[in-house]
Image 1 (cartoon, helix red, strand yellow):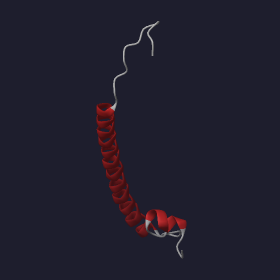
Image 2: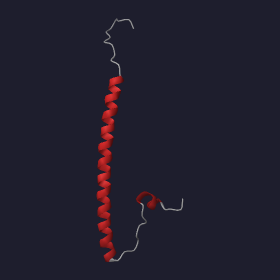
Image 3: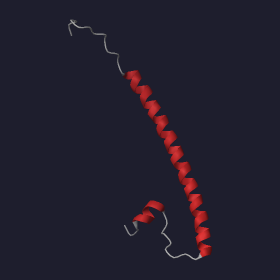
Length: 75
């Protein structure tokens, strides 16, 4: 594919050697990315829960009730 696994996952190449000024700038960038990822995961979680509720609702609508059977009833 011509790209590293790290770049495929995070869409940037990691910096190996940093001077202090670059480290400060990088840490600010990391904080921004972390906030973006946290918001993304929160939204994905809420969406998954909503979809789960819809699926439960529509499954239960189609699900038929079982007859109340007692011992000795013919089935």
